[in-house]
Length: 76
Length: 528
Picture 1 (cartoon, rainbow over the protein chains, first blue to last red):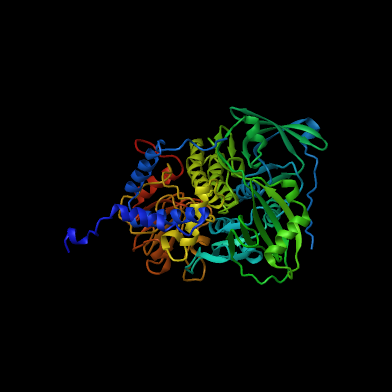
Picture 2 (cartoon, rainbow over the protein chains, first blue to last red):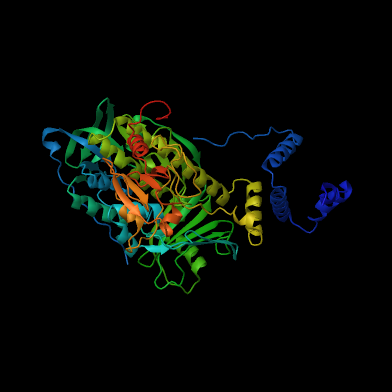
């Protein structure tokens, strides 16, 4: 099997967006949060690459205008 | 049943007549850790004075889960069988989310170990037995109602001012072991800060007498159960039909109101159902911290147990960590006091036990973050993990209702000799010895004792001064667990951790490793 054959078809951007939103349609805000968390956990596991996960977290925080690392937690 | 704690008599110390006296070694605090230190020192032939401001053992069960390694240490000290006989042995843990089982674990799935994964026993029993054993040793001067008021470090010792019901006296200690807990007087006197994290959530802890309660001896943990919504609950079985229940209360709970017996009884009734009769034995409300001192040795003063480091109760790492501190320190102190090793050996106490404390704090902090999420996002991820756990192995591994105490492996220890040969398994340098049954029905760990031992598999050991040797067959469970072939040789420390290992019993290399074990290594690349 060649590399080209192994690669799944790319996402249709519009379809992907609609699909993610649709997955929340019948959920309460709390259930929605849980669903997103479950999705992130499943996707992180499927990705299986801590380096790419770190890059994604950094990119997501940057998109929100936040530094990569949040400030230090409470210390006595 | 109402438990009545023993009351130990105050005896007028001889120092009161003159106003002062001396003692080569003083332990502050007759809790589990202080008493364990004193008993182990006595086993090494060293006398100690133990000062305690109270006159009894712990009130309430306190630390209850004694881990395999701790049980092995008490076996060496002569209390192992008693712990097994009286305590509740368990190894299975179950985690529930809502009313559903989310995850189940077995902490010791293989047979062939003298000690089980855990024994539950109220701290007061262990302390009573330690007091008995210390007294029987004839080397421990236990002084109840002797409170340390002032601590003045000197170059060659520590000056103490001790207050008793019949007056004060000065005690000049050669060495001081501070085992006086999280609110250590010794630590306060030295002005040493803790580094770490404080948690806001309050927890209710109760010892509950439930006769004939049909629940297996296992650890049960509930996230968000129907009988205590939005919070967590932990259940442990103890001897005497006594059950230990921890209820998470949240950060806003009023500690005084929560201690009201009627209110506590309501929570327990909701959990057990209306038909189960019970009696409250002890109730307390607590918060906790995950933190430690920057250094555990300050000249002639050592901090051991909770005075040095504190963790949350999830993981049973407080009591066990303290006992393992004691196990690490005693043989070194005994060797230095008896002139068998240089004083620098004592520096390895914190070189080894600070990483151990950090490991305990890391696990304890992570478990607490999982159990008491502080943000909406944290809670969503926690709940998602619990929901995924049923069908996804990766999520089961993320369920953290406490990673239960395992002994620290002293990987970077200055006392270890690094491997030079190839090993496919077995305990590496710094790791604790692994138990296995022997042909005569005894267990390997029972044969090690509290001195350095050369464990040689399937070959004759060389005769070396200062080390006893023990031979084991090169086939069988012990050989398998130690990755042994004929000639494989392990050098074990008095605390039963591995100092070095070799494929052949080469006297020259063993002698060098033995020097290093005692902190006598010289030259480059030795003491780090």
